[in-house]
Image (cartoon, rainbow, N blue to C red; front, side):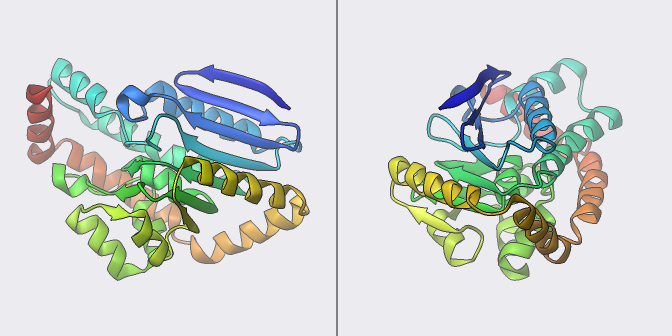
Length: 266
């Protein structure tokens, strides 16, 4: 039985009778790219669920054939064109918003499962790998394309990707801005499994969630915290470095030119 189902700011949320909370990004026309309202809704839900005893597992996903295409570049381009570019305050606000998204996901004490179908790009990739368990369809892929538009990875990507798949492979992904297929992500240890299609993905996630809700929530929370203390010890410092670096890069000529080109193409 599903309860508390709601669509707000492009985000579907629901909680079932077993305590499995689901958060689905529903902005298919933008490949589930996140604007300010959607981002704030995700942060709000995670913050609320973090203190609810009846929420045992959280599942993150996207509707319409994409997990999340990152920040809403169309909106950013429009805002930039109308205001004459990003000043320091606006730039910092954008990057802090992405950092807060990842903090909210990592702040959930219960296990978080990411279910990927299609692209996980930019901050979408960071949100996906911020989950504790990640499963993807074979057509899914990761992309940190920041360098292609004069930016650097944010949302904790500089820490989380390196922790998950090692420095050399993280460097390749971030410095070259190339796609990483689901099969490669599984081979490199970034995700936990690849299935052929959406039906297989839903079955895998449902099976995993049911297994988790049978375990002690206290034991799961303490295990998760202990693993984070070791594997993601550097995440807070990474977020800080990303905020400083990305705030500067958003105001730099390379990104401003990239935004202008995007506006002209649109």
